[in-house]
Image (cartoon, rainbow, N blue to C red; front, side, top):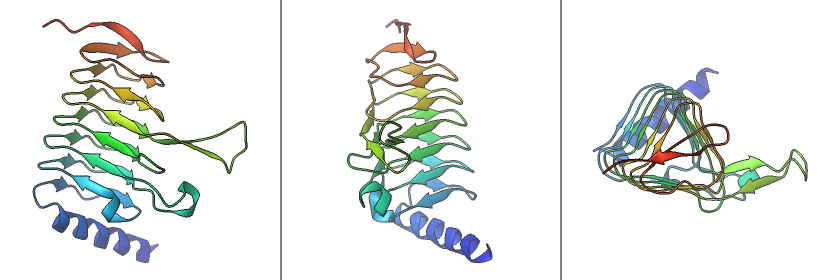
Length: 175
């Protein structure tokens, strides 16, 4: 257990050197090869967040997470970019605590060792509120708000507020 703790500290130290403009707080976990991570500019990743970068046998040795400038990932979020396509997050992204973003899922029809991999694209100026979940294959358009505790299983257009389980467009955001 102590060895795992020090391995996590080494990975965080290396990530901070790779992305000097970004802030990665203590208590974050980065799993997988760091070359599958891209933090473009000033990105803040807060304590307790887990980012899975793929690169392991169960995800076909593929995966990636790209987070653009001005993004804030609140505490205790989980971002799983495992599998082909991974996750792309646009500029000025804001997510509340406890958000889960998963580019992979178990294929329950085929069994517990089969996975579904589909890329996630989150546009610029998107806010995902606390405890929401975004599933594989989802695209969220620019200037969109996802309400708290929502489950996003299909694409959400630009310029709307969406929420619920599953998430649906509630209304357009006024200009």
